[in-house]
Length: 205
Ligand SMILES: [Zn+2]
Image (tube, rainbow, N blue to C red; front, side):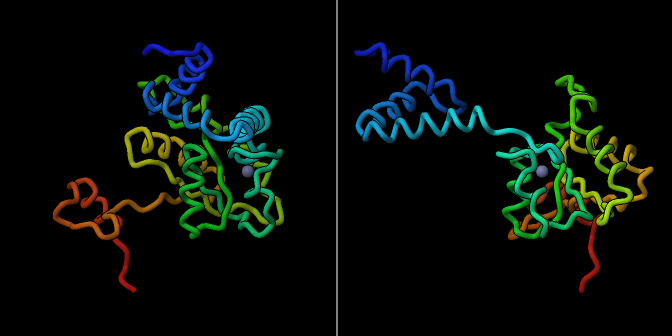
């Protein structure tokens, strides 16, 4: 691609480094910014810089946060007796969007994957153990851990490892249910999903 301007070429090169954005899309975005008010580009650049330099991880749950404690950990109305363990911040957002959960979280920062060389020590597992150990005599002790991990081999391996590690704390350890999606057709479900749905069937109420 021939550019009339080195400045535009540099901007396109940087934008095209983002995932899912090719050179053509990058050029379209850059030209779009050139057409708009200069202020809009400045606001965009400032918000990206502020996000990159100021966002940190919650000291307790490792969720992304602007402060030492994230808004969920700092919220006194959240139920401190239950912790939902997830792989990353996107999972926190997904569970929050359901509006069905009022407990706290613990973000592992990944998942055990021997293929990618990720072991338990690369994840925030020790900090979860510390969190539970320090919590035994708290006003609102943790009673339940939900393992909300992906139904993959890596997710299952991580869940198995965690439940072994957490067993000494005598908590209720649960996993999210696996089954047929709402609106899904039984005959189109794969046999593993349908099999799991039958194994984890619930009593009709
Ligand atoms: Zn937090």
